[in-house]
Image (tube, rainbow, N blue to C red):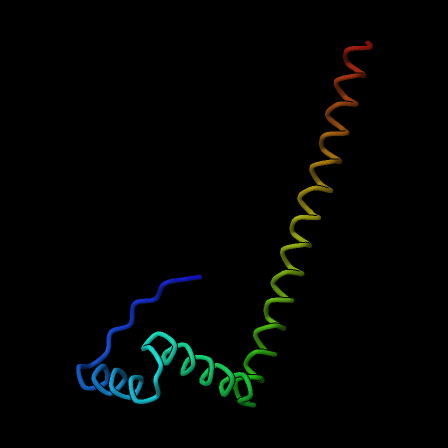
Length: 94
């Protein structure tokens, strides 16, 4: 569980406190409920869903580029190591 500090205007805090008391809830539970409601609303927003799809595609492209870069590094490194050790063996054997 994470702790989050939120700054509220005095009037917002007063409303939050009073409404929580009237609803027979503590302030923390009221805030958690409000956040959950907002997150649900946001996750159902078609514009946000479109942005999420675009972000996922960007992440996939970047990951593919990084995988290719890693593969290139290790395949080049393996060839170099093999050549170097073969050369050393040949020189040692000569």
